[in-house]
Length: 155
Image (cartoon, rainbow, N blue to C red; front, side, top):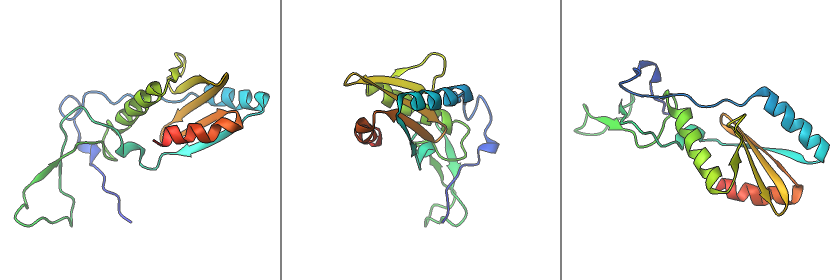
């Protein structure tokens, strides 16, 4: 299996990208979430986002050379313009976070001001808590609501 990646090491700040910051989950938040779920008797579900960094929309115009072995007749000197983020881009994680953040807020989740990766929503009188961790997320709530939440997140 091969993975198509960008050579982000050759990107130059101010030319190829402006911003790369993406908030990181705090370990204290993870420990607090585990403590809360234990106290409430909830389960924690982990959802892996297999193509997380391929789902971000990039703001800048990014051109890449065609990879070795990828041949297109009569177009040997062409380059590609990216429409979405690609593994290896310095701004890929930021782009994915921005898209996921917007999606969760559209679903009615409120972002925590202390840890920007923690989202809370009250659904049917009970709390639903989501914690983003790079390319996976932790989901906790009453067991009966887990499957409904997973369907909304998968969409």
